[in-house]
Length: 411
Image (cartoon, rainbow, N blue to C red; front, side, top):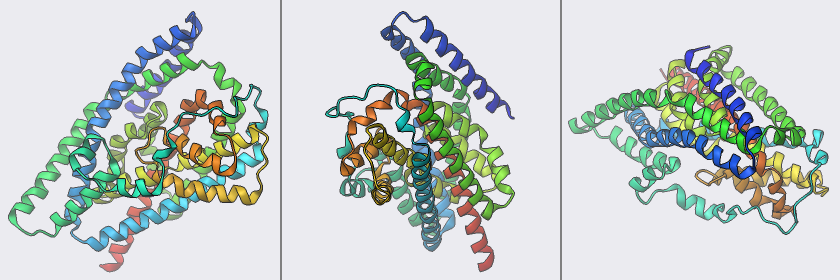
């Protein structure tokens, strides 16, 4: 275990102990919330620094990789393979969640009063529709897209820019490509500086959550949390097994390399926080920049395996909590609806909850059921985030191996 992983693990443990002590000693819930606010400052600062480097890092790595590629057919081939893997992984995630939620039925064990059926979760489900998603993908201003860290918009612009730069054979174009490559090196060095603050951000995130909610909340919903993490464990086995079929024993070396970014993602419940370090470790694994720079940002928008699992699991949990029976046909229909709806969640605040809130009324399930889990959502988010990181790690490595095999056959 390297120094970074050790420090993050210690920060996670210290955050739990500190949060528990503050929650126990705080005279009231309001005081605990105020204390948690101070811990959150550490996490907010760390995540702001991460957001500060995400847009230029994605843009420069993708442009330099595509410009060096110089073949638009290769771009289409890599994109098609990536999207094919993403769809298959999403379906597996949703299906596993459906099977385990039906088997363990965690909603039946709920021992707290249900909220008023007329209550609303307060989530803006209007942000989730196909028309807005398709138009939102294409930026009207790259400056606006970078200011808002709109990864998918940055990716679209960078693809056009990188391919155009690759087809330009002037001296100025070659100079610009070299400049982009140098900027990538600078951004990676800057990333190393920012990631030194990761243990501090992890400590703040965990301490704030425990201070506010306490460990008691985990016990009340213990069966639900345990069932969800068991489902995630099964999904991990499926993803790693699929990776093994393509990568062989190398998949285990890959998992060892990405321990630190996965732990960062788990502790902060933010996939973005793991992105810079994940890029570095994928490069160490031997994946070329052009593949990482294209597949990884695409995966952050379309390949959220943990979030997929969460949507189907929570929807069935709500049905069980309200004792609303659902036929197998209805459940499979809901699975397909969730699979399509979830592809528009990039950039939507509390995206997984928004998807579930939008889909529940379609099957006559009360949106108010989401209020049952809002208190523990942070702890669930930790699990789905680290699973998203794992899913994108394996997807990037698999697509890279397929691309290498294609190029060797062509040679």
